[in-house]
Image (cartoon, rainbow, N blue to C red; front, side):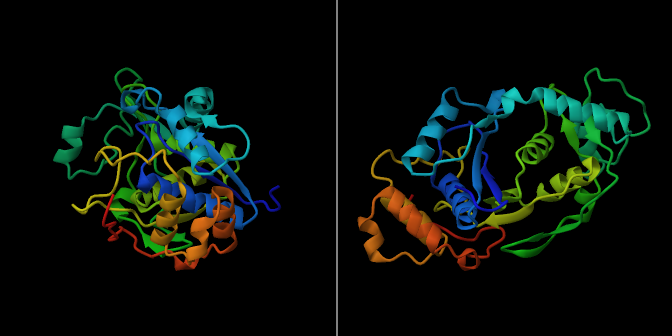
Length: 296
């Protein structure tokens, strides 16, 4: 049973099966939560139907169980959280902290690639418009518990970013902040590819008057071409065979002290050993991930 106030989470999108890179994020999040005697939650971020693969969410949950990564409580599905997102959008609009925007990508590119607040005072209506946050609390840096101080691109930090898309879908940054707050998440452990949106998410916390969680960004596994393993790059799915060799590879990728006798343990015993010996500060501090895996 959890013995602390720590709450972590793993929040995959169902755009395909989990691969080795996904396992790194899930395992690092799981170990950090369990080592802190905390709760580890799973959330399915299914708010972008055009990118989702039918059946992928259920497959992801089966993969987590197969690899011994058992979560606490019920799975939260973002597709069932639309009312909560709408409530927050309404609040921001009523507080004059958001506005409708009809600017095209072409216009934004023509002005240097960063949105210039053009629609802020144009009093646009909702038809064929996105909703942008009116940036009152720009965040230019944050502390990462693994990487130290992270500096953001100042222009992007001050940008009025989209929180509801023109096509009617809720933006990732809005949904993730609303749900992390709802689930009481105290620390987010995820891949270094999500460093950039962190300052926007912290900014949203400030707009809502909420306390942001702590952050840890883990190194990414790269393929032989130097690209991060991802569903878009057709990274192979985690094998359905014995999970122990893959778990040991993931632990070694995270630079954990894995001994030879761990190979003879069952999955639960292996993960218990990993929790007991978890050393966050041993994880490679590579912000934009120069690490490669020889065979994937």
